[in-house]
Image (cartoon, rainbow, N blue to C red):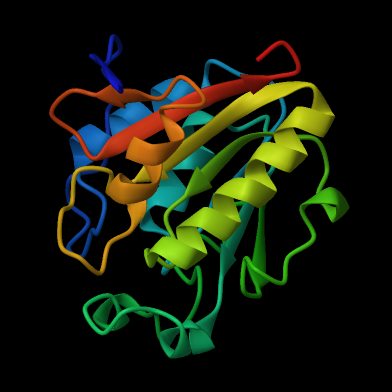
Length: 193
């Protein structure tokens, strides 16, 4: 069973950005979660960097690892291919606390990153890819000792989007929370769970 919660903080998000795949209400929930944990941030699926830019603004003392892969259209569903960026993270290059990684999250060794306490999964939304990203994230955070894993597009129901299906299954084994009125779900992982 996935528990619904509400965002308790209000963050001033730049509403002038023309092309935004993550709604502002969702970004506020994600930022709220980044404030709940220590350590750096890993964003899987940074695209052009719109959400990454907001993560930078509200987490100036944390390093953000922004991961995406131009050739990811080979593994993504047909419906998600239209979101493939022409240039990864081009909107956030001026932010000094971001490291852009042009690599598939499946190939990324999370243990090469420095002290990540928050992992945001918003890349390839196929069931298999979300499952692999989730398994790698759980393994990393568990070995680290504690942290938060956050998923975007939880409530999207098309068959091509595996986020909801995976999290509904995962919620039988670990506590998953969903921000009411958003597409954001998360879990807090620790060695105690």
